[in-house]
Length: 159
View (cartoon, rainbow, N blue to C red):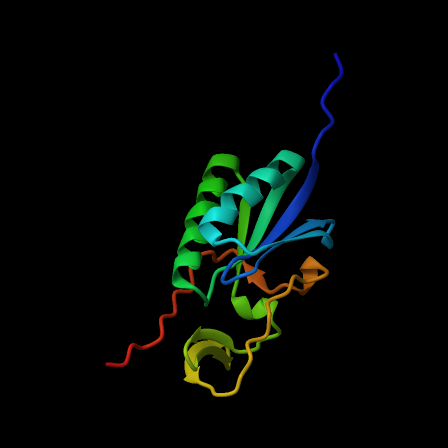
């Protein structure tokens, strides 16, 4: 009987803070494959990761932990923590600004998340088009840490 071919070991980058969801497959730190999904996070995440795990052995996942959609952040965090526990996959958290060159990130209406002196705040900005998120070509360019707790930054609600 033929032995099954061993799966390649890869690292995965996941940006699921808004649509589209971005997934990058990295070997030896270099982007090998990009996956884009227009589905909702709750629908896309299980299918995307199932398909990747069938094809590859995931050693580590880098993910955008916020700011962004509160529900997406929560779903991604719970999903990835479950993978970490069940499969022993290492996690690294990045703030979302690592994926859009530190540009403002849409919160709601004219309210945007911005990073000022290392602190994330909300500001009203007019006539600003949010810069799309993108996957880095190499993992070395990502500023991620072992801190994986969600960056829940909720804009103030005005009465």
